[in-house]
Image (cartoon, rainbow, N blue to C red; front, side):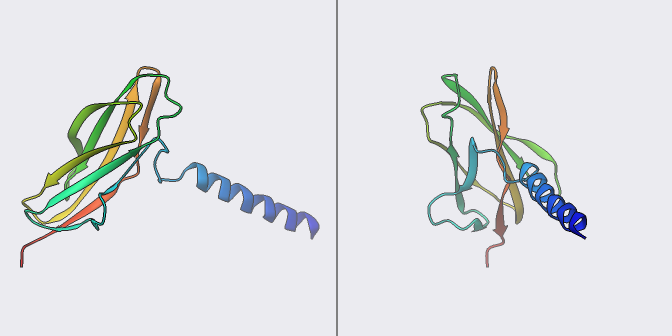
Length: 131
């Protein structure tokens, strides 16, 4: 009986550890979210402002490449924007306006020579038709 309880306890600890390690939460180096009080829900033609919070304290380089990818409704991931940020930066941002309704997904990857790549978790923006 004691062996079964111990085995079950070990299994639970391992399950939580594996779940934490395989999380889809994204990297700690960059995270994306709508700016300010924006909710991620927009009307066609409305501007969405996206912020990428950077945590580059462990970078041993002066600049990183930032690749923003988009997945349009029913589509695959494609390059949306690409730029360079200094490692002293704490955030990056971009804006977009959509002309078709649907849910659009975004993710960011940062990298440099001998650093990364590190990919953020995905965020979703919903564009609805004008009423």
